[in-house]
Amino acid sequence: MPLRIAISDSGFAESFDALVNARREADADVSADVKAIIQDVRDHGDEALLRLTSKFDQHDLEQTGWRVDKTESAAALEGLEASLRVALELAALRIRDYHEGQVPDNRDYIDEAGVRIGARWNAVERAGIYIPGGRAAYPSSVLMNAIPAKAAGVDHLVMVTPAPGGEINPLVLAAAELAGVDEIWRIGGAQAVAALAYGTENIAPVDVVTGPGNAWVAEAKRQVFGVVGIDMVAGPSEIVVVADGKNNPDWIAADLLSQAEHDPTSQSILFTNDSEFADQVSEKINEQLMSFATSATATTSWDDNGAIIVLDRLEQAVPLVGRLAAEHLELAIDDPDGLFRKVRHAGSVFLGRHTPEAIGDYIAGPNHVLPTGRRARFSSGLSVTDFMKRTSFIHCDDQALRNIGPAAVALAEAEGLPAHAASIQKRLDRS
Image (cartoon, helix red, strand yellow):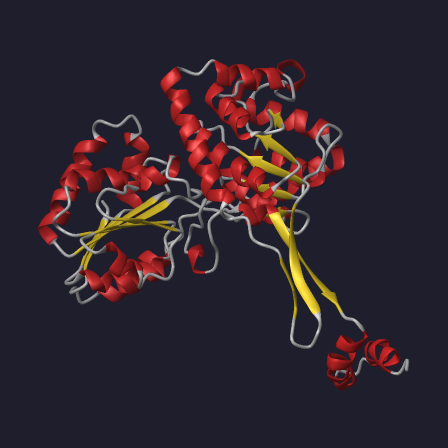
């Protein structure tokens, strides 16, 4: 059964601490397994990919094909049912518009000392995106990863995805075509991440790897970080909903289950100041769980990780949701902006009674690749800057160096670095 606690309970602080600190990552210690897989790919290249794909995805890359031909993804897009294509194109348009607005401006100016300084942004040359192919097909994840990369100006975009039995969902291929993916490989798991990071005979290495995946994929990204850039190490999905009794309990129940259906380790938490409303939401959750095709997964998630927290006043939610620093935060209340102004830690916030989290998963525009596991305390969702890097620059003429050089010499000497000091002082002594 899900946890239910009230802020007025004598043991509330201890119960909430346990909720905040509960570990929902995969129980298996996958680190050693992933390390071995990465080393296997580094040592044996394509031979390792061939062997590991046969083992985990039950198909022979030599027979099913390593790479998806461009004609196949183009045909998948052309073959979409008309209304589904319209929906996918609308999503792509909105995601592209939002992310193109994120591209940062370069800086180039002369300061009061006469020094020209600034910074220039450049995209990485090659990026890789990982798209899951296990529990479900996620064309939305293709759009959310590929479109920011293209908006950033990435030259070449490579997609890897597991293809159980050699098959890739046509909707995923259609999304890849629409988003401008340049290469698609029928390879998944930690071995695919290793191939993107280190390269093999067939696959050239990339500069950045992004995208969601299971515990093995997340751990592989963590282990290759430094060789390549990554977006984040993400864990199970989570949603926090702050709702008063004026909401339709059926709506809020669906919102909570929208994350519970992702995975048995997902988490859904409701904060409300209305105990009767909490009861109604619980009843609606039980009703809906009987009708969803994903009910087995959602039931496990809700029973094992779900929580209902009853407050005296909605304002009491602010420090509590801040401690959770959730991936998704819904504020289904009269004045969502008033509460939002006080929220410091959340991956993405959904304001008002008519903004379910699911609208952000598909069509709103902001990225749905978001920090989980309280990482919103220090990180943000995927953006174009994950595919870019900033290069600063400095230009001193003779007078500018004379204006600031003596201070630099003093600091270099104080740090005991005479060559640093000399490289500046020799120029100052020139005349």
